[in-house]
Image (cartoon, rainbow, N blue to C red; front, top):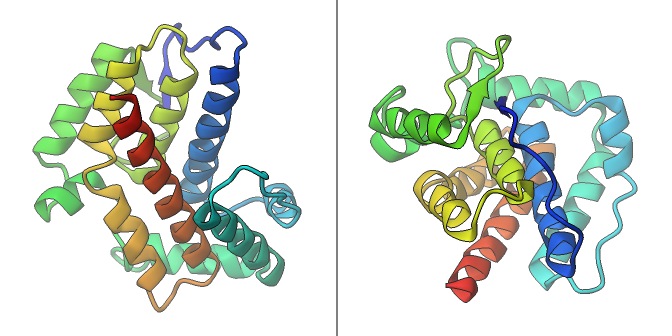
Length: 207
């Protein structure tokens, strides 16, 4: 994952911050689930999900499906599924990188563009992380931090979303739902797609 050096501080308390916290937490969960199979503790939390009263129908359905998937799958079976989907022998069934979805190849211009933007925003890759920065988990982690960073203005947040998430990740979540190997991660894909739909509406409304 990535770390925002010295600038990742929470915004002041407000109604907007409550909304931002929900958005940031949703992205953080996606980042966690896409970076590694869920721990026993996280899986236990997912089994007790409660949806918000004001959530849209699609989001309620997505959270409900994730809760049901967490109840039906063991951590061991999810770990096996994760390996088949994202690691495999040589490579997994899916390649969760922006460069792959945007160009058909890894380590291409989208990654160079991303690295430049991350440097400008003050992000540094952690020493024990060896995946390219355009992994879906890393991008969800970054946008989560940007949402909660009081020094990040709306235009910076929107530009990052449009340049590095909104232009490909929904296709990835759709592919995740369609994969024959997806069980638990089908529900993760459904939640990811629902979250991005809300984000698209949010940014369109704010503009």
